Image (tube, rainbow, N blue to C red):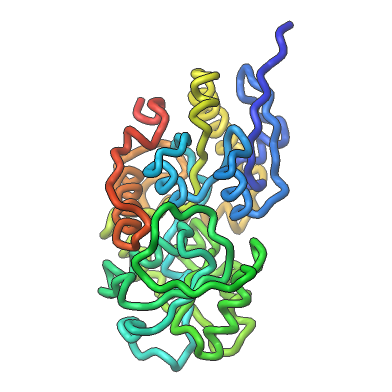
Length: 327
């Protein structure tokens, strides 16, 4: 019997991929070597450096690498989604209005991170705060930025290790050194309804709270805008697709099958939260299809990154996803 081709796949364990990692779902015709020991940020960094055939990747970083002609292509598979308003933290009593942030210094864990790009986009569209209206402070290591930035960015040298960037920002917000901080956060239904671990982590320092926390306003924004942020996306090396042209379709089928088994790995609270998320939105944001919401969302992130100096042009969706995504 011929040996199956071995494909390396880098992704942290998640209820939506655990059935694949545990061997309950296979990728037909392939042996998958799973690597799951790093933080999401480090996985993104390692994939951009050339590790793994397939990996979970920051969506904003993916768009930038495609603009620069790097040989990656995406699957319509999104583990991490959800609004990022709750990722914007400030110190209670030091702002009267979000517009007061103009002229101040805002911190973030990576200037080019997807959560940060979404939060800046929200502040642009809903608060009228342009990226160039403030200065920027970065506590962590960038994964990939292809262009020179149009804003002043102050950085820590050496940067905080992956996964340890938030505490630096929380302390600075509490002291008043930063007007606000944009951090990675809890995704999915927690982004809509609140809760999760990030408010507690940021709240270890006095007065640090989410700047936007009204659930009804956040849900109304998602419905009004027709945008539901995609934070992480599954990407492949183009050379792997060229070597194994049947792999994308088989990966999509496997991820969809694993997603159906996700309830096996969810707590009752999480299962109820995702059910409520689907009910409020009126669709399943984890169906792994490139529908109108997903297309609108990808175009919005592209637009935001242009405003933020991270990209220069809009990319056609057909250049971003495997052709099976449009079937």
